[in-house]
Figure (cartoon, rainbow, N blue to C red):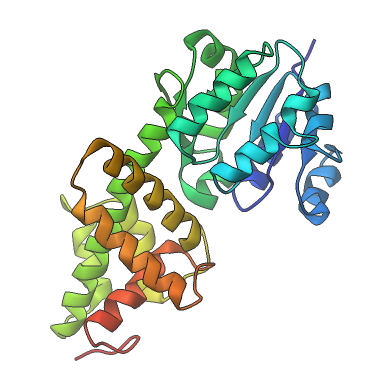
Length: 298
């Protein structure tokens, strides 16, 4: 019998991911807070459900991808949440980026009802979601990971089982630290080029051929040069991710000053009402801090 799939959360990332699962031929039940978000999936043959509980009653494996810890808790534990409709044997795969501690609590609550859970946050942005080329970092039991892995292989290319419950979320925090530092570094490099009267586009092209090359330089460096900040990953979500990182650092007594700096850039960006832009728009904050007008060369 073919595995029945559910997907809750159909935003910039969730919609193309759910569509890839449907196009792979899996029966799909979907739910989103806004009915219009479900329309492309329904057009592709998915069935729209009125609540997370309704999805949970009908599927074998249920993916969730929503904004923050509180949203995941509401989807799973709230009135008409997943737990209200869950059957023993259901697997819940949370692909959101949330607190590792909250993930462990949710796994425990679901486990008491005979429901397995994996935390499987992703990296790769909207492009990766569309292309099915995401990096997927998974926490949970190895046997459950093996059961879900064929579905992960539809969604991503780099799929790693990190460890027990919450380990995927810890790995995602590490990912966000590395990306954040690189974003800030690329922005600073392009600002130095501009202020020195050197073409930032040519500097980027040269750096792509050396040890400074990175996906951030490739994609977000071009965004900065083009001033194209349409969201692949929204700044308000990146701010939330760094809040989770810094909360963990506080609990563990770690000094993460570089991450704290980028968090301040994001705070400033949101303070300008620009949280819906791509997180690479921190370049605008860096420009302002350096006294450069947008696109201005010295």
